[in-house]
Length: 256
View (tube, rainbow, N blue to C red):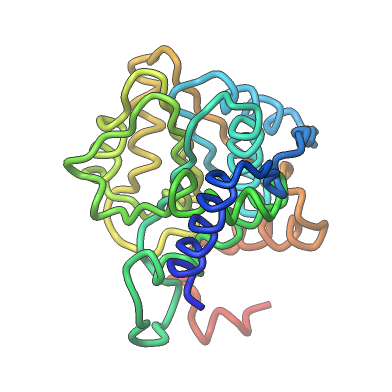
């Protein structure tokens, strides 16, 4: 049974129980406490503070430093506490490396594998039942190309992942769609940029610093902030010393 049909069946059962006067207790109705988020370094502490209070939060820098996890965890906790009304997840539709070809389904279906880690964090923190009930309604995947012309109302927490692949125009479109009381978190590592041109997240970070925009923060993560694993930290440092992947040649591989 498809999710749409399953929702219809569930709604019909709820309506029937209401008419007959039976007491309905949803399986996720028991109060679930927000799980604490512990900063593992000073930059994570700054970023978590920004995610809690700022309208625009930019977390940029080394992979594995917890940028996306922190954004998803804070959004989930705010949603669970009723501090926000909806979570919207988006990202540039740019695959890494070679494409696997055509993927069937809607744009949302195509984006799902890319944002699944974010949704996984949200699901874990708010509970499976509540997530499944609210997904597609209050917890949404928003294709980037559909953002222009729309707005994000008060109570919206927008997570924009892999923001290093956004263009300047795309960043401008996103930040000008925020209504009072909404917020956005940009997460990205410019060293893992898959498209050419000026990086949108770098442009935005410099803009915030240049104009000292109130309610906006930029946190720069370094290899020392990596929490994924010690090996990841060492490899990132080595990659930065080696330079861009575009500079790697067959001759350079064998250089001592």
